[in-house]
Length: 208
Image 1 (cartoon, helix red, strand yellow):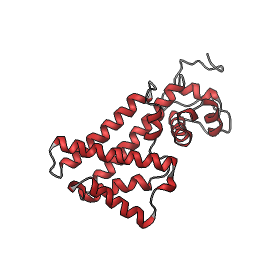
Image 2 (spheres, rainbow, N blue to C red):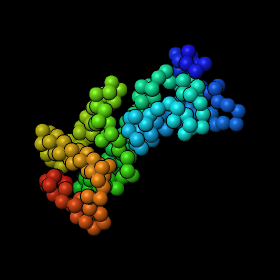
Image 3 (cartoon, rainbow, N blue to C red):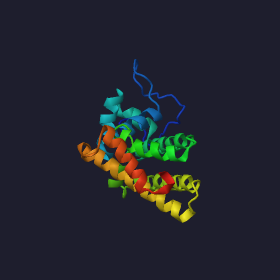
Image 4 (cartoon, rainbow, N blue to C red):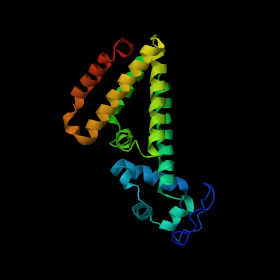
């Protein structure tokens, strides 16, 4: 029992939260996962802490223990949201019919996405964490497979398409690292557009 709430009691997603105080909005498991993912974007894995999140959500720790047995289960739920967001981004890219335009949009997204939108760089620091590591590998593998498949559509053989996708992914992760640590070093405006074209040229004929 923790804070008066049995730690082994985990509420289902559609079950009401009985521990909510009168006048407070009933919080779901998804509310906690969303808040944890946002905290992760702002302050890394260390920002996923029960008391600060409870304060952010305007509730008590009892609400947390109604939905989750421990912090790791909250991290798991938050990262599952990140997986879903990654899948949505790939689905949106796949709806772009022109493969060259698709490549340009994906490259440009590395520059224009809201700061912290992609937490890959944050998670890389914590790749040895038992929850983070497997999910990080899952998303990275999925992105590589996605990129390779789209590149194969342009006529490259499978092995070359995979190398192409790996190069593109490492470039975008590198851009994300600089955006997080030294954004002033990245080009802006017309210079950014020229740099995106340069990246596409470096990646070779499939995206140029």
